[in-house]
Amino acid sequence: MYCMQRITDPAAIQAVITQAPPFGPGWDPAVMTGADALEIWATTITDPTDYVAFRLMHGSQILRELQIPGY
Image (tube, rainbow, N blue to C red; front, side, top):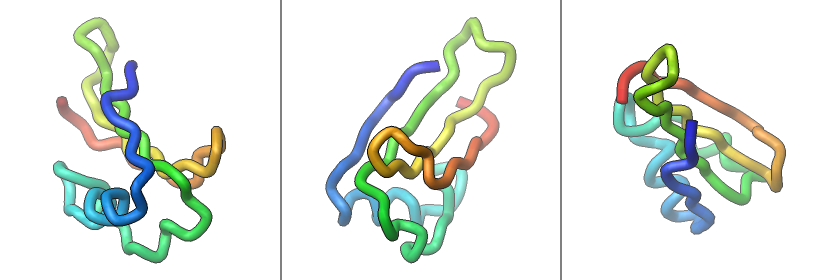
């Protein structure tokens, strides 16, 4: 897996997390409380399953994560 993107701008985080799957996790904007970043992780061709993970972060702590199947 690798981190495709790290977003730290609050408006940009909200724009991504409120998009419905497969483009975003479809979360309510209220889940942003305490978050300072959104990381979007993806599997590689050598991983056993294909998925994208949306990770709402506070420092190095994952506050919320959603894995969406596919690339």
